[in-house]
Length: 538
View 1 (cartoon, rainbow, N blue to C red):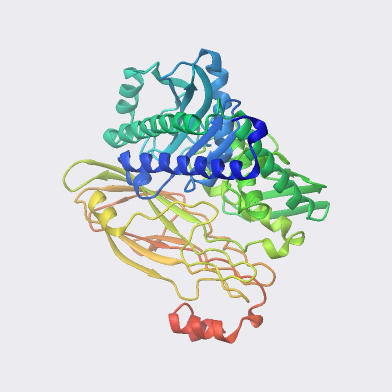
View 2: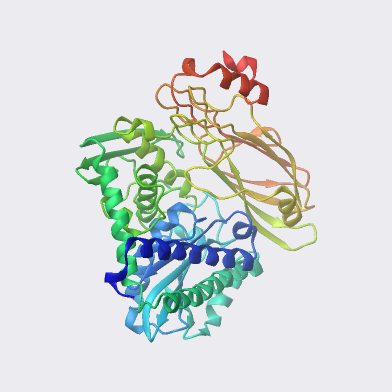
């Protein structure tokens, strides 16, 4: 099949098939993984890129920000191992924050795909590892050297031969080594499955490579994105917000310029980096912008490299959103997740009916210690605040945004960690009031029943600055962490003795529109469901 025969119907069929291939690779990754971080919480991404390194397709269930970093990671890998030096069976990895996803805890695994002796594509699989050494996954680090083993771009497999030194190096430096190496090899397995499916794809459709198909997919997406941007009024749109810092509030600022069918986003005015693990490398910042713009332009199209072409992103070197080594970046999501509401707030004047009120966001906590049977525990508990409301739509309860990790089922979590979920319930009145109500937050109480000390690393935001409402909507309830009923530093780490409890009060989403305009039928339904109480109507 040639470029001339790639009509719209053929492109649509093959585009859908590439997405299906990506989804099957995700399924392979999940089924072969060892940790709940992958198998239950889906802190992962699979990306298919063509021979030129352009993103063709992604797994439908993938972390949004990883899709923005994967193409750049591939280019960094090819700088070290040029395409003409790669062989079948090669697998290249890195977890360097500035080359990968912004912190050391994500492993990027790439396999070149050969067909008829030539590279035709690359598969990248990314997962958050249970551990990578150092202090552990949290915000406590002062510099990158505290945050564990940092792997440069290197070959885990060379022409199919495993590099045993890298495996042993990782095992020696991490807690729960069986889970860490198990998840690493699940990524390798997933890319191998991708190799089989992509070569079968070319044979089935009688294609020599992916060049023409990739160009069609990306070209159509770029054109659709440009049309949506062109519908926005030209102008410069600015926003500035304050968020929780270390010794006081921090400022994030952005300026967005729309000119015709292009858009530029600049973060001048953002505060400098701090000596805690909340700084954000630019790769993560840019990816969050691209995700946010995808939401506002062509969310209905499967993601690929075409939709990012009209958008440029810049930030001052050394600011919170362009952290430089040796800044600590472990909990970079605590700052980076604010990129979306910052951008949305700036564009509220341009596309008010498309902008979401602030989300309660995801809450991540690392649990490290020993199971009651003696084996090592190192894993993440995910909890979510409420989703922000939109024009015409209430926010969903306890639904994450702007990321999308899932919560580990209670029974699975308790079995694997020997902690107990003592209480879990929605929080009435926690969603911001509005014509459309913000999603509810929740309360979760976790008790240490392991019989051992358990260290918990907190990485909470929205504790001082609650999720903002939009267009007259009220803010949601703020987040809070408590240890044995005492409020604690949301960026700290704590030792839970046997029987100790940590309580998560998750933030509600912001409301949209004037609360006076909310339909009485909606208010009655909220009262009946217990989402609000009569006192909450005041």
